[in-house]
Image (tube, rainbow, N blue to C red; front, side, top):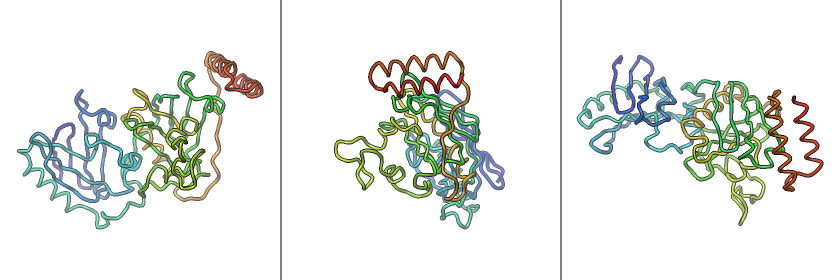
Length: 319
């Protein structure tokens, strides 16, 4: 097509085999759009195109992605608010005829198998390296490894006992991202020892996570016991979100990048069991701070004498 269609917060440029979406970086644009900057969506990644009335004299042109085609959409798992949907182009109502024209043009270039789930990701994931600050630590991803470095002010004693974590993507089966705009948001890594995670399938978070400590055999929380989302507070393979920590525009692109790497490096369900890898050498001041916090946990009775001695020795060995 070779044309450009400018809307509110985004511009769509139509190429021979894809639509290039460039997001506005203005102060009124959603932060997720500012973070994504631009995305190239192959026509093969689309399942359908819709044009519907919008709010306040606008129309909405939406390209519907195929199931399994976009790691960002798969990681979001239906949790994105309408205004954060990167596949929506909002236009003034007077441009409805033009929008209908482009909708018809897009429909003519859809893949014959557009109504079927994609066998692999067709849309590029956000690029590593990347990081964000969660409520109980800092998450980092270099394209090969995911690291969680715990915060002494937010991390639980269980995470402090486990120590900072590093996971190779080849040791993971997938991820679960729960929006920080929901209650008890988190990013959880699923080791390959857990049940395989198929992000192209439906189901609840409990279906994905399976039973956790304190839950009944059906996978739902037992009466009076914590839910799976709350268990993330005790899971060294998860970081928590809170007010101002792990916002959508930081944590979702991160989750999508990890998911894409996991799917690319481990296309099958078999493989070696996952293993936790200790973090590298740290700054002496950081070690001293962690030993101080460990001492506070020990004095509070949250860490036994043996656990305190063993963890202190482990931290000192990293100097």
